[in-house]
Length: 209
Picture (cartoon, rainbow, N blue to C red):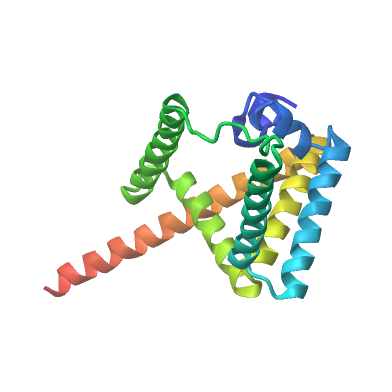
């Protein structure tokens, strides 16, 4: 399949788009044991939250309370019994790490704001259609389920859709591009029809005046 027929005219493989590292390997099931483990842990967490009635805040608070209690008792006991203290690493965020994080956040924020500006000013119809469709789908899904179930479902989708797409890439690209071309043609016809009607109404209004 030529690059013209590939989805979004991309030149890179799915693995390269996903970063080409460990994350891409996990999402595309190239490290099956790790992918299965993540899905099983996520499923277990979903079951715990759904069945026990715990919320994320209450669970995290209880886990942190248990952790600091264990470490505190361990440290106090070690001081009394002349034993070594808990082997904790240096808990400190370096200035370099914060600068890198701020740079990444700033880059992504500027990219997001630039895309929003293009949509708001009507410069990118294709981007508007993508964003509108995504937000509409998210709104529908949000009305059908709760946040926890939506998060777990999203994780399952992340670990299945890219892998399936990579396997059947040519067929998906072919049918998607065909549907996209039909949608663009329909949009052009609809826009032309609406523009003609508006111009007709303006002409009739001028004649009446």
